[in-house]
Amino acid sequence: MHKYEIIIYWSNEDELFVAEVPELPGCIAHGDTQATALANANDAIQLWIDTAEEFGDPIPEAKGQRLMLA
View 1 (tube, rainbow, N blue to C red):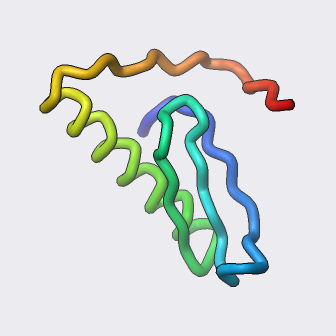
View 2: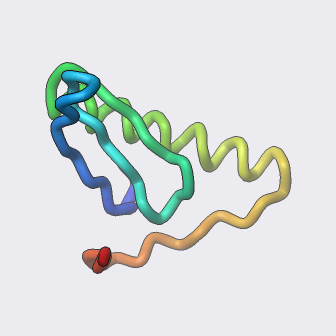
């Protein structure tokens, strides 16, 4: 289980739930249900981290608090 904030919302355009991980740029997943989108987001987080490690890119620490988006 990762500790990054995950934002899940319904996309009318795609007709599915989208799960975004704001602390990891470009880390987005989707699913037909909120639960599926969340599970897919956790998989996407792990893939994001694995790829960053492979290329020697920095991995942001989870902030451990709700992000404030404007």
